[in-house]
Amino acid sequence: MGNNVIINADVEKATINKNIYGHFAEHLGRGIYEGIWVGEDSPISNTNGIRNDVLEALKNLNIPVLRWPGGCFADEYHWKDGIGPRENRKRMINTHWGGVVENNHFGTHEFMMLCEMLETEPYICGNVGSGTVQEMSEWVEYMTFDGESPMANLRRENGRDEPWKLKYFGVGNENWGCGGNMRPEYYADLYRRYQTYVRNYGDNRIYKIAGGANVADYNWTEVLMKNAHWMMDGLSLHYYTIPGEFWTGKGSATDFPESEWFTTLKKALHMDTLITKHSTIMDKYDPTKRVGLIIDEWGTWYDPEPGTNPGFLYQQNTIRDALVAGIHFNIFHSHADRVQMANIAQTINVLQAMILTEGEKMLLTPTYHVFEMFKVHHDASLLSVESSFGKYELDGEVLPQVTVSASKDAEGKIHISLCNLDHQNQSDIEIDLRGIDISSATVSGRILTADKMNAHNTFEQPENVKPAEFTNVKKQEESLTVTLPPMSVVVLTVE
Ligand code: AHR
Figure 1: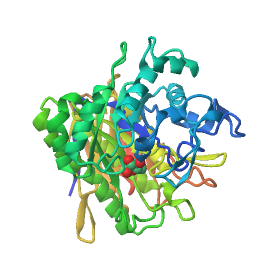
Figure 2: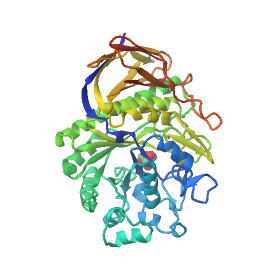
Figure 3: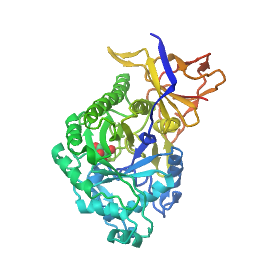
Figure 4: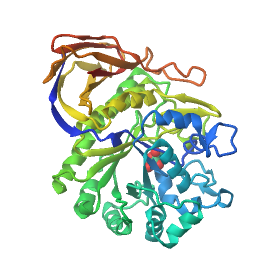
């Protein structure tokens, strides 16, 4: 079967919200502590306590939005424990994640400083599960109120005169589970109550995100939309790509057979069905698509690396994870009219991370490289694409061999992202570019690929998997012919 793509370069659909390239960093394992925060006295080179190597690497991703402090941690977090002189801050046990001491050295001021350094929008997740309405309301006042008030004064006492700009605020996390084990009807009522006191001070305007469904819990979305859609700007959805079963064995990050490669990618593709079905329910109550679907936790979840604290969720990251990331982005693009944000779980040392650290060493994962390569799609216009691809078959199961997406940026450059899921076979593709004269255009490309399914970067070989120039593309009169090697992610630019 031929592999054909038609790109209508003159048919621009929705804008690809750059926030779908967002991140999530929780107080979990070595994500914040060691991964980001080493403290001012650390021998590891840092700026105000934030490690410089990580900072530089993250800056290069142009992270648009960063979610913090959890996750499950958010519904146990009491923000006042994390302000004031660090030596006086409460030490607590991170009961959910590994039972380790949390010294609260990374709190609101440190997080906001990190966001300023990264030029990223903060997305704060408040505590509904074990916190009060007053606590949530005061946090917003502390961060955003400019005038004379108890919380604004406290912020000034702690060294920050000006309020911060805060756009994104989540009212709880996974309130069907670790965030309080609530029924949707109960959470919908709590959401309505808590969000009432998440106030807009001065010209700060908060985009309120309601805690959404787990995977295919469509009833959750139905109940939330029915009872509160006019009080929210976004509704979240969490879905992790887990090759095995959550409780009995998720599978290894690096030691897996071809059947697990296949299952992992099949499960990544399932994101498309989930978005379609949740969006259809949202359409019923919000036909103009005002409320964004916010996929604020996604990514691979494997068994933790042997020998590490199982509560730290530390896992390696291979070319398989790069494919999972590329597949997700192409799916998110195709739902650009509803998906306004997505946050990969999680930025450093946790689950599908961009960066792994070991003491002063740091490496960039294959997932990092996909985020970097796909930067060209940030806020670009999604182009209309029609495609037909051959099959990728294993043991009688079938997937499309390739996924594709295309966008046009503000300068008129066209970017085409392609993922070849097949671990054995290359894909020869003809891309017909309509609505544009490419006779004088130049085409360039970058590729991330490997010759083993579990190829990954280690602290000894940190550049084993990294992007390279892609040369297997030929320009014809009105089309491009492309050969994708097995297991590859390619981004082409036509300008
Ligand atoms: O990302 C790890 C955890 O997964 C988060 O804390 C929680 O929200 C989800 O279950």
